Image (cartoon, rainbow, N blue to C red; front, side):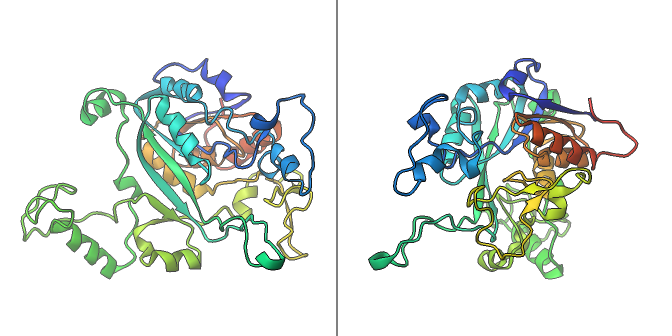
Length: 371
């Protein structure tokens, strides 16, 4: 197992990576949620005018004031073609997207030559609406819904022959179903799942359920270790659990806690968090005594346990995970904790340092894993 941290542009880094050398890509690219720099001007152009509301000036600065939040790379099919080259045949890409811009990400990945296999939805209940509320006659009207989920592209490089032959030759091409099964919530949940899946509930008849193999009606040795992983994962918050009805069917992972966010950063200075309300007024919707700083102040930190689950789903034992948009290193933490090698690229020097420290904090103590 090794860890390679690259401070620089992932497009340049990909040029030096051998073809067919990476087992999986698990990444959280910029969502380009509000940046309009590409549409209203280029570097060196006159600043956007403030106008009546300041909307153009805010938008030209990028999501949460971050100038890197554009689709220049993540929405470029040529970039994903470079990713396609370094992935082994049958290798998977899992890429987070924003609900407003997901289509551009998915289309770029598909146009590069990947097959879109599915979409995973990560549901959570703690999102805050970024809405401009109206007044006067239009009191009670706004401009946005409350964010409560993020889509994840599930794509695969074309396989070499059949899935079985691709696995034999390249070691990738399938999903780690048993390694990502959802534990049964209890005896009743286990009994219901096994009974339903044993008797052709998927339309293939009571004698030949093609999802789980062939059964006889009285077969009693069907004994999976948990529920089949679904294309929904959730945060476990009360309103999400109520909406799901049967949350035990889905993988559970809470949003990144402060402890998770700052783990391994004991010697780092706390900085203001980048909230959705903008750097000028961070956390304005929170109570006055809320600590609005963190040693890891990246605006979109993903929970380590979620990244462990996602890397485990698409990476073979001993495989290598690539994250071309590393941020503060959550994918790397998940990969290392699962025993995978990791290559991460990050443009921002501060986030690169944070990522290195956070990943080092979870590496096996008897292994010097950094390359």
